[in-house]
Image 1 (cartoon, protein in one colour):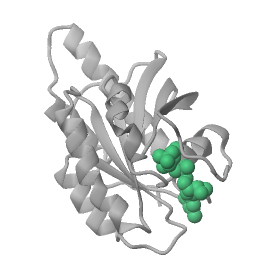
Image 2 (spheres, helix red, strand yellow):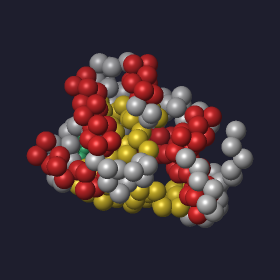
Image 3 (cartoon, helix red, strand yellow):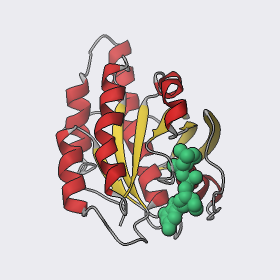
Length: 207
Ligand SMILES: Nc1nc2c(ncn2[C@@H]2O[C@H](COP(=O)(O)OP(=O)(O)OP(=O)(O)O)[C@@H](O)[C@H]2O)c(=O)[nH]1
Ligand SMILES: [Mg+2]
């Protein structure tokens, strides 16, 4: 176990949300920010910026979120928004296999876009619907990609707050990584991954 301790300062967390159109990206974010279900009738165009501050384990975390558009015509623009993100939330719809298969595309896009050190998190949304993808398959795939895995329903709100709290916790621990880097004692990303795994982030889900 690493001997690093979380800091108590307010921390900014830059998150970009990506994934196929209609998987529920915007609805998940509304659930997190407003704690209610807002049925969406309009697809996101280009991207939308959202903010929310949360208190997690005595730390103030300021989420700065880019909600990107999943529609194909906006894809070339998505990279503009996730390139500066520290965390990338790749969302799919557990009731539509095609959206899970498309994660291959999204993760590859991120990895080849020059994004450095961003932590990828996979989210299976719409668990209130009949499943086309079982949890174990999605967890195993995410693990192979080096990503944490969560599930939620933006409709019932199950798992939503938990997922964002866990992302905030990852950031709290990553804060120590930044501090170490400033001191010249670089903690490699691999070590952060180890901290995340030791704290059970890989295994924990929201439901
Ligand atoms: N049953 C169910 N429906 C959901 C859930 N989350 C979102 N939806 C519905 O799915 C549809 C698409 O949701 P959006 O949030 O607009 O999807 P999006 O991923 O932002 O889509 P784009 O903006 O086009 O990329 C809407 O009709 C939502 O009401 C959920 O957890 N369960
Ligand atoms: Mg949207």
